[in-house]
Image (cartoon, rainbow, N blue to C red; front, side, top):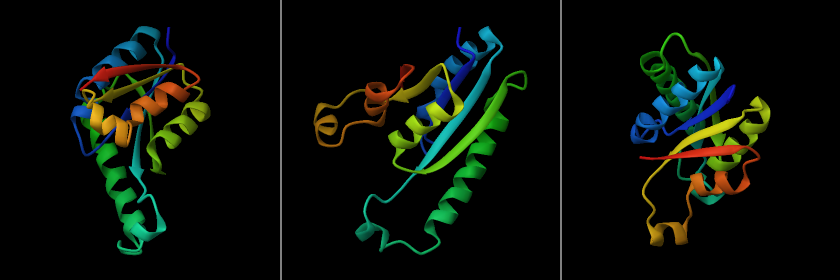
Amino acid sequence: MFNTVLLTVDLNHPASWKKALPQAVELVRASSGTLHIMSVVPDMGTPLVEGFFPDDFEEKAVAAANKALNDLVEKEIPEDVQVKQHLAFGKIHKKILKTIGEVECDLVVMASHKPDRVREFLVGSNADRVVRRSPVSVLVVRA
């Protein structure tokens, strides 16, 4: 089965984990494996945009995300599940792909919203980017 499962979550949108988290927990329990739960604080994208934010924005955003991730794990992950937390700052799909290699996971579980053709054409989705580039299987749970 899957001994090492990476669950990606958006801490600002509970829909990103409400359905995906139970799936990941079930898979990890079946194999007595480890659940890696990850969230990424997105960067601003360009230096021009970064100039509009306070100098300590990244530090405060990461601290707030770390607290939110700790709270999520404490409240939602059953005590019998071995869990490791990961928090990153940057391009979401790139950080997820990097973590896949670092933790040597067997499976990635992530949620994705219902496809919207216009939005997908303009910006794409992180789930799509991860699915196309991941060296391991990806379970996409519709939120």
